[in-house]
Length: 449
Image 1: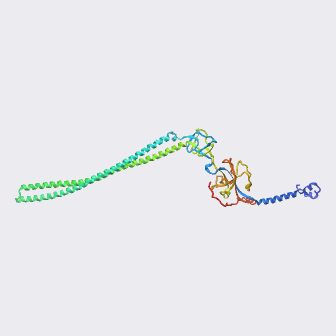
Image 2: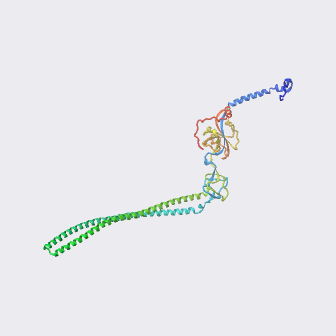
Image 3: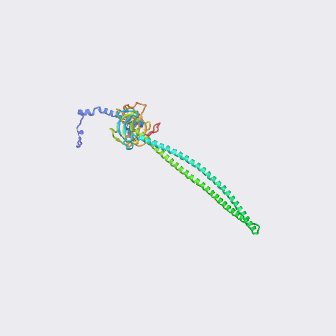
């Protein structure tokens, strides 16, 4: 048996006389087997030329077609403490229904009359604004009155200056007349004195002329004093005009300064009123946030924060809710090498977890228990798992998806591509090549998901 010996037994001993030899070497069974092998080979060769639908497989889960229909969690925009629950898990809630009531935990908001007191402060500041407005009106009236009074005073001072100019002119004429009278009196005195020396006039006449000369000299001095006084009056009138202008400019400037101060206070008060109005609105909105309400119709899935008196921060998840009205879709993931083969409107076969199915990936028409879908969106950025996300919607031209399927259930997807012979597909698989690249006749624009 092991061919250890060089003596060949079959050459020395014949087996033709034995029944076993006849059964083995003279039976027709090997002919049937050979025929079976030949027929199987022919059938195999024929199968190699049968059409095969290339496909891209993916694993995903059931989701909704639009983001607002997907399961969501409700957060509180403010920190608080749970005071009362109005629902329990599994309850149906309508949009606006109260889910739970919370209370305030921050000290600056714990005053129960915070809104009313802030409103009182706002009203008080509003009255202050009105008072500043009235003060500004009064100061405007005061400035107008001072301008009118300044105009009047300047008119009086200018009239007085004009009178002083006329008085200077009159006194100047009188002064010139006095000088002429003095000259005449001096000549008369000299002539009388000469005649008195000649004996033609008496001493008495000389003394009268001297007296007359002295009177005229005194009158000249007096008239000169009047002229100087008139000139001083002109200077005083000019100074009075300047004084009146300066005085009323100071008064008007002071009134305007008070007006600007009042306007500044008014603007500051208006800013405080606006700030208090903002605070009042914020406090009113914050009070409304104590009641956590349902954003849309749905079922309460799970209370993420349970119990009473439990505190939480703003933005923490409190309860999960599942909308009642939604359009199902499948979210699946494909490898980057297969992404160029996925197009909007591509046909996809889907196998849902929990629904038995028999499916031949290369012959989709021979499948059973799968459902049709179409690609509606292809993600343009790679996901965290290193694959690209594809969103699939139901195909309305075929059977509807199961009604009892739930969001979050698993799904196995097969995107149907180009038809090729089976031998080509085997050759591609053995070489590790991707499916054939092709472009559909009408390729809609890809949507971002």
